Amino acid sequence: MAGAMLDVVLDDSSVGKALEELVGRLGNLTTPFNDIAEYLHQSTDDRFRQKVAPDGSPWAPLSAVTLARKKGTGILREKGTLQDTLRKQVTSTELAFGTDRPYGAVHQFGQKKGASGSSKGRPIPWGDIPARPYLGLSSEDETEVILIIHDYLSEPVTG
Image (cartoon, rainbow, N blue to C red; front, top):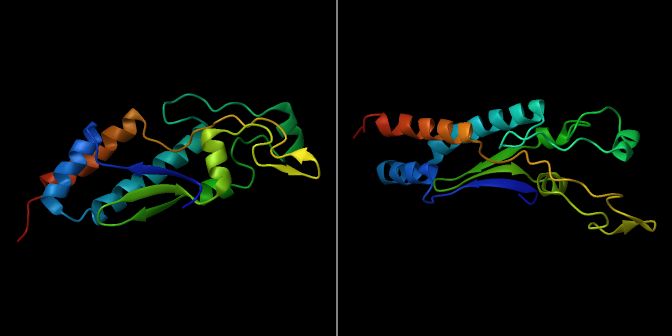
């Protein structure tokens, strides 16, 4: 995916430690990663409805210029394409969740006026686009991911 992605990795965070323990027990994380990805999709959809970042802060409001150009007042939601292109990539050792749309990264991280070049002598975008993070783990998400992992750790091993 070339747009914006959330990578869940093994690190020294509580989620990373729980994943490391799960790797030791299962070896193949495809099934738990699919469950985690499903949860992340639901959580991200909720953020789109609430118009908030993973940390709970509200997205920047639309500028008057943007409101005059677009149909409706929805933030990150003119046609719903960005939200509808959220996808997962899961292997036995990796989970990636995000969008392949280049503008997904623009909205996640923001972009300065003219950063995409120009069209007919006008900068693209026509003004600064503030970051409106929609991908990431909230503290509630971290807790839920740990609970999903715990469910797998507490299941008896079948041999």
